[in-house]
Structure formats: structure tokens, C-alpha cells
Length: 218
Length: 218
DNA sequence: ACAAAAGTGTTGCTGTTACACCCATGG
DNA sequence: CCATGGGTGTAACAGCAACACTTTTGT
Image (cartoon, rainbow over all chains, first blue to last red; front, side):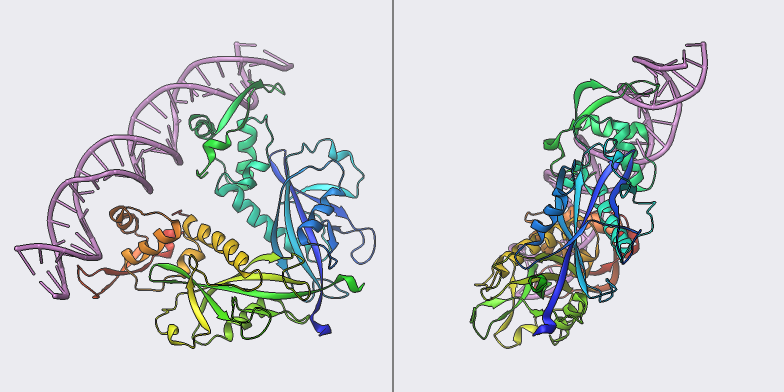
């Protein structure tokens, strides 16, 4: 019966849109194994807790983070994930619409990385990030679901949204068509405010018009 | 440390398209608990096996089944899933394009059920089937992915395909538009054969034109 | 001949693509 | 006044929805 005992851990991939890029939260490991490498936030699962509870706990430990969506993702059960003993990893995806500029001033063992430019990662976390990010990107560009919506709070400009969207999609889109699509179909609502950073004409600040998006595809 | 030991099981939801309906494979439980109830095929996970291996083993035990796709799905970690002790369930989805008519002659403790007309189910399997089926249906009608393609082998008629599609979608579609969509866009290839069952004009037998489907949406 | 099931044609609408062009701000 | 970036206009085209109509089989 003993050989049916398994150890599980919850792994959370926290994503945010920052400077048009899809970013992920990592922390630097302080002890062996993989000391000095970067890893995803994770925690072992005791047998009195659900995986969802465990995932939320991990996020609660992070100050300043307001997760907007959290959902279960994949399970990694390869025998050699951990050098010491077998641990089965369950990944969760969390998304925050938080502005990262103030969070970046935290200590330098916690940081946000562009998913395309990752540092040296411990365990199988590189593989996990690659697989999960691929799925997340696919979700973002497929339709107006929680994935897509959760990255942007109220008050974004269409060029901002487009910049992020293009990076996730991996190819450029016509600026003018992108704009009209959202405005003509009333997928966004004018908040009445404007941006005023840098040169050039200020952009209109919008928020999503969830009702109009229902049932539509990007 | 002991309270970090968890017991896992792999649960496989095997789907097929039969008589235009989305069907799922169940077996009748022979012992307590839930004796006489129907359950999904499942097996505990020992600590030397991956979940994927375990899922495939379950399918291999079924004679006559050729799974065409198999992929990991959700994790159910509620504390009260099993009346005796806590077992974490990992669901897998398998799809077969097998014709079920010959499989139905099996013993009467194994059967295929319409996902809309399920029998009395043991454990939390009703909940699992409901959640997973909802996702599977969503996948089927979203784009020409493995989900959609795996249900039909070569040699199907467009009305057959439409019948299944309508049932999954939950609403009728115009027969003529459906036909033209697939033929005009060359999403299917004429095999040169015809059906010859029942009255009415025989239908052309097609197979999918995977190349043309790449990147397109239903 | 008639019912039943499969296949074709036409029209208008919606949304996308590929463009040229105009407007508002900072230096 | 000009570079920079945001916003508007238009025409061609593809795909979808809503129809009427024709063809091929079994009885």
C-alpha cells in the first residue's frame, strides 16, 4: 500500500501584461538544490487541503498581488522532476492586472520576467513555463475570455492593448483595423479620459464592454 | 511528513460519436462502495508510474478500443471524493473513432451512454462527467482541433457529421450551409464512395482535409 | 409517382484586410 | 513646423445566414 503514497506540490504561474509583454513572476532559490536558480512559487500539498486552497495561499503570501483569475492547469508526474524524491506537480495559472512598476522595486530575489527571456530555472520549471505559457497565449488570442480580459483593468488605450496582443500573437496587426474593430463593434467603452505621456496625440482610455463581447471571438 | 502523503487515481473519460450523439464509456461497479452504480474507468497511481502511463494502461485493458487521442484534463482534490479516505482524482480524456455497434454486444456491466442521459453514478463521477463533458463539447465546436477530428475516421457523410455537431452544439444548423462550408472551403475530400443505407439519395463519403483546416475555425 | 434524404444556387449581411488620409500633442 | 503617435474613411473580399430549388435513391 505504501507504494501508492505520493507527494504533491502546487505550482503557481502568475502572469501580468507589462510594457506590452507577457511577464511571469519568479523567485530566486535560496537553498540547495538549485540554489541561485529562479523558480516558480510553489508549496507542498498536505492531505487536508485542496489544490485550489493551496494555490490561493501561495498568492496570498505575495504582498501587493491581487490575482484576478486563478485556474487549474496541468499536472506533471514525471518520476525525475525532483532530484531527491518523486514529487507530482500541479500547475495553476493566475493573472493579475496590477501595474508592475511599483512591484519592481522589491528585493532582487523576486522579479517579473518576459516569458520569452527567462533566466536559468531550477527543477523542471523551464519546461513547465514553456508548456503552460504556450497554452496561455493560445487562450489569450482565441476569444474574449477571462484570460484575455483579466490582464487589463479599466483605463487602457487601444495601442497598449494592441502592443500586448501583437506580442502574444507573435505577429503585427494593422493599427487602424485593430482600432476600428474594437470601437465599431463597441467592444470597448470610452471612459472619457486620455493619456498624456510622451509625444504624439494622447490616446483615449477605454474599458472592456463585457456584454458586447459575449459569444464573440477575437 | 506523513500528512504530505496523498493517494491519487487516474480516471479516464472515453468518448465516441455514435448515432450522432456524444457517448461515454462506463462500467458497473461490482463491489461496495457504490455496488451496482456505474463509474468511469479508473485506477490508483503507484509511485513508479506517470499519470499518462496509468491512463494508457486503463485503455489497454479494454479490448476493441483504439484510442485516437488521449490528453490530461482536470484534477479533483476535494477531501470527500471517496467515503473511505482521501483520493485525488486526475481525469484524462480519450477519444475513439471506433464504430460502437459491435462493442455494444459486450457484457451488460460495460456500456456506452449518451452524455445527456446518464445512469446512476458512483462517487463524484457525475460531477466529473458533467464538468469534463462541458469542456469537451466546447472544444469540439471551437475549431478544427484534435478533439473535433478524432471522432470521425475516414468515410463519413456530411449529414452524419452535422448530426453529431448539432447535438454537441445544442442547436440546429442549416443543412445546406453546413454542406457548402465544408465542400467549398475544401475542408473535406471526396473518397469516391457513397453510402447506401435507407431511403433517399445516397450521401457522399468524405474524409477530412487536415491541411486546409490548419489555422481555421469552425 | 411520391417521399426522403442529399446536393446546388442566390442574395444580403458582417467582419476582415489593405490601403490612404487626417488630427493632436511635444519639442 | 515637423516628428510622433492616435484616430477616421473606403473599397475589395471572404465567410455566414437565410432562403428556394434540383437530384438521386427506395417503395
